[in-house]
Image (tube, rainbow, N blue to C red; front, side, top):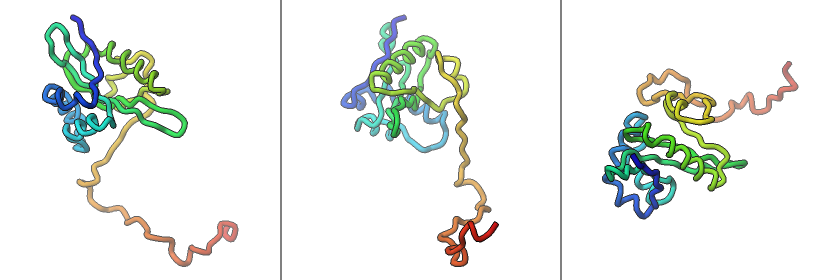
Length: 166
């Protein structure tokens, strides 16, 4: 079946949002942190902070998936960050999406395409490798057992020099 991966212009994001929102919501729900709502993603897409992409099934005239990318600029290089991917029938469109996003990233001067996804995503990549892990701890649900951060150096240490104590 013919499918195409299309970038969504910021001006068109609101028009497509009713069809795209369920895919974005599912991706955010899977991530589970509550850092973003779907409407935050729409706002970012409207102001050009992120780029929205859709996997369009030409045969059924439906949007099967939505992808959100962001160009991250570092002092020495740029990355194409693949932030959110949500949708169904992934095997039908993922290879084209990967190729399209990589071509876009190269055209934007990006050195890497990166994403923090589940480990299974490594199977869809041609040349992708795991470079680390992402970890988190919910600090709102933890007992406050840690010592408070110091406000300043104690007076007796202000004039202490390393060379004076061995």
